[in-house]
Amino acid sequence: MLPSLVPLLRSWLPRQRWFAGKGNPITGFSLVSATEILPCTAGGAAPGLLHLLVRAQQQPGTADCYQLLIGIRSTLPPHLAHTLIGRPAEGPLHGHTVYEALADPRLAGLLLERLRVPGRLGALRFTRAPGTAIASGLTPRLITAEQSNSSVVYGDAYILKVFRRIGTGVNPDLELPLALARAGCARVPHPTAWFEADPGVEAAAGAGLASVPADDPAGGPLTLGILQPFLPGSADGWQLALNSLSVQADFTGAAHALGRATAEVHTALAEALPTAVLRRPQIEHIAGGMTERLEAAASAVPALRPYREPLRAAYDELAALGDRGRTWHAQRIHGDLHLGQALRSAHDGRWSLIDFEGEPARPISERRRLQPVARDIAGMLRSFDYAARTHQPASGGAPG
Image 1 (cartoon, one colour):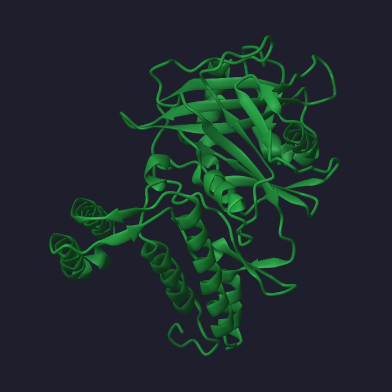
Image 2 (spheres, rainbow, N blue to C red):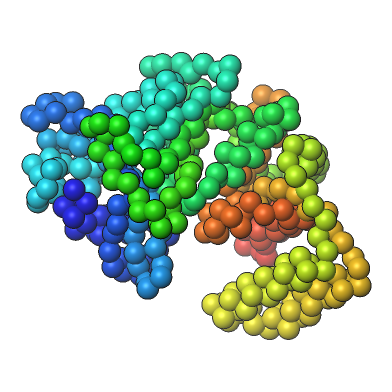
C-alpha cells in the first residue's frame, strides 16, 4: 500500500502547515503502522478511514514520524475537493480517491465515536477518563488556524487535538493535564479521552497493521490525540492584550489574574509530580544549552550578533553561580508558555492554561525534563514584550 501512496504523499505532505521539514526534499518513506478504522466497501457511497503512521526521511539521519488520517472514497464530493491528496495509480487503493479525513464531518464524527467506546483496534488504543461520558451526534468542525497540529471541535462541548509529528513516549500535553486533574487543579481542561499507538503490537485479524521493526525508535507508546472540554466564549491572552493596547485600556488586572493562575498550575505540578534540585552539573548543562541556542540564532539572524557577547557572558555567569554552590528548584513546567496558551472566560474572567505540549520541535524526552519555573515566567514576559512591540498606534508612532 505505501509504495502506491508515496508519489502522492511526496507532493502533499510538504504543503501541510504542520509538516516540520519544509525546504528539504523527502527522500523516502517507511511505514510504522497502518490501521483500517473503517473499511471502504468497493463501489459503496460510504467513505473509509485509514490511520497511518509514516516516517518521512529527508537529510541523512533525519526522519520524522507523522500521523495521517486518510479518507477513502470512490469519488470526492465537491465540498471536499480542497482536501484531496490524490488518486493512487496502483496498489490496494487503486481506483479510489484519498483525502484528508479530518475535514470530512462523517469521518471526524467516527473518530469521536471510537473515543466514546474505549478499546483497542490494531495498533490503536482508545481510552476514556474514568467517570466521564461523551455525548454522541455532535457536529464536528475542523479548526483551520492550527500550526503544528490539527484540532476538531465537536459542537461546543469538546475539542480534539490530533498530533501530527509523533514522538516516542507520553506527550506532556496528556501527561501534565492528567496529573493536574488528579491534583484537583481547575485551571486546565482535564482530558476526557485520548488515543495512543503501540506500533509493536500485532494487529487483530483484518486490521491491516504493519508492525514496526524491533530496532525502530518509534517502537514505544505514542500519544496521538486528546479530547478535552471546549471552552466556548473564551479568548486567548494574546488577542486580549492586543485589544487592550488598541484602545489604550488597562491590562494590569487581567495580567495579575493570569499570574495567579500560572502560579496555581506550577504549585499543583510540583505537588503532583517529582521535583529536583539543580546543582552545578545541571546548571552548567542548562547554561551550555542556552549558549548553543544563542550561537545557532546569531548564525541564522545577523541582527542578533551584536548581542552575542553580552548574552554569552550572562550565561557564563549563570554557570559560575553553580560553581559557587547556588542551587535552583526544578519541576515539570508548561514548557512553551505565552499569551496564546492562556484562555480567559468571557463569563467570569477566569484564566485557564492550555497546550502543555512544550516546544513541538524538541524531542519528547527533552520536554519532559525537570526545569526551573523561571523558564515559563520568562516565556510569558517575552510574550508581553512581543504584544507591546506588535501594537502600532494609529498615529504610526513606535510600538507601545
